[in-house]
Length: 154
Image (cartoon, rainbow, N blue to C red; front, side, top):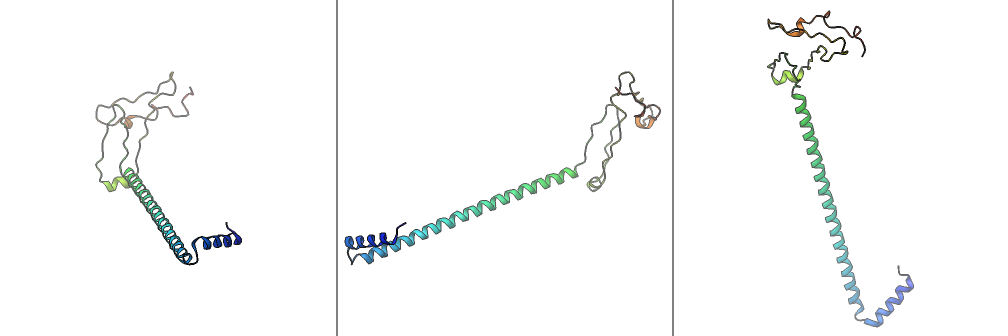
């Protein structure tokens, strides 16, 4: 930065070169140039800040849209009933319930008699298919299926 002595020397040089009549005109021109520069820098700064606000607003809208889509997807996933794969030879029935009942009921999963025996030497007997239309679980008796305590470790 210029010190006070440097500014005085510069003022004297300008006074000698341009003369006392031109010096006020030069000062006015320099003042106008500085005012235009300030105005341009202020306009640039306000335009930059406006663009930043627009970008932030767009990002916020996109984030809200994503969260709304995620909420809609999770709500749709909760309303849809779960489907289980049917075992071969097992009867499958689809209950006809309205959407309100499905949303409030808990899913009931019936336990399956072991599908893979725990030991190769003692396979678990499979219940026989009834000929009168009753389900296989109704025929299976606890004496036919060994309990967990009775099974041998592999």
